[in-house]
Image 1 (spheres, rainbow, N blue to C red):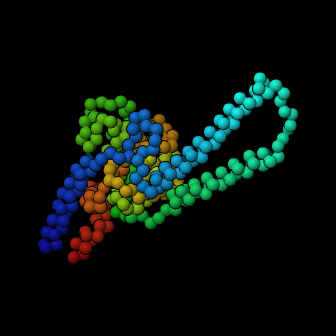
Image 2 (cartoon, helix red, strand yellow):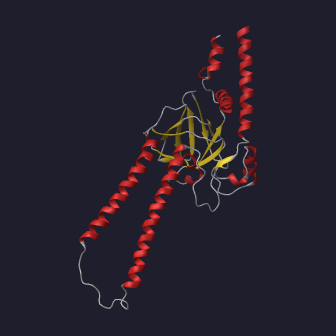
Length: 296
């Protein structure tokens, strides 16, 4: 009798906490979101993305110097060696020191670029042990997510799936989910929820054709290939809502296959996780507190 009372109270607490967590997720700030007429990267909220932004700026400096150098050479040639200024052109056929220089200098530049870019690539490809492990499966045209440590899964569809224009019904659905009409084509009915400052590992695969899972603010992108299980990782540093998109042409409704990730505090994540396990019939014993209570 005492055990059944404790179990009933625990179930009620889990259900209530889960509902509160879902409501709290609606108030998150929009962080990783595209902006109209934007020309820069989205805000970098992981170490991986900061590395990518730094590398991009580094390469931009090199490219700018090379472009200016070539433009100066062209200007010199135009002004000094046109027919009017130089009626008697030189007749030499080669210049060995110059040819050696324009071969070795590009090699040095490429080696320098490789020395800085390869560590960034290797950091992305070395998958650490994850605090949270999620399997993402691409379908035509939605994503399925499985929290493998807790034995539950759900599908994630674009709000207004299949529609290419905003209708009053879709706008109402967006508002009900905590978004505005500006997030049409970005927001999904369910979202991946992860805790802030934790290592997240996403196992990626496809169920039909090749898809690609990407969140620009995290600096991650991984093809979802049927029959193969790839992985990516990130460690989000800022609470908020982030949007991504399938980035591999996968069929007719490819444009309507967005990704939504909500980064929350550890407390909010624990509360959401309890409600999600209850809602999606997961394994309640995977939560330490529930396991202890059940054992007692």
